[in-house]
Length: 180
Image (tube, rainbow, N blue to C red; front, side, top):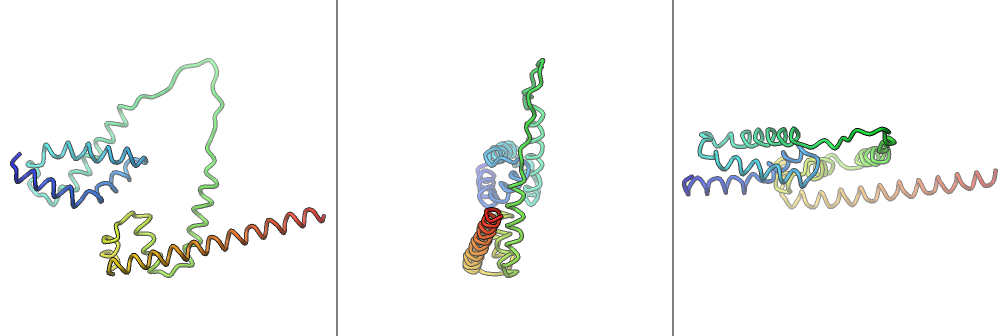
């Protein structure tokens, strides 16, 4: 590969690495595995970089390489099944609390102004950078930061208030049970 192609690839990776890592995180649940997946895809793409005629399609090419790599990993995994006379007790993780926390947070988000909600969703759920969020919402990076700061402070206040209310209800219930 020519020196110009190497520099072009390095520049591409530098500018697109955050978006590509987000794509990798959507393909594999573990963040470390997502980084490994991206690095493997970049290594495979580096060798074929000069063959990509239209560099605007490089993102699509890399995503396809990540999908194929993830599929290879999945097929190559070792299944840890061992035949046995007796089956082990089956345990199921109870994700009720996690769902309750998510539902509480979604409900608490309703107290935010629409602009604040948009900033929180883009920065924390979509994992966009401050600059990407600013571009998506048509505001400055400073406005995104201050809006996010105020939104998170408001969410903390709301969640603390709800926790105090829940404690008060529990206390009243205990007192009512004790009196009965």
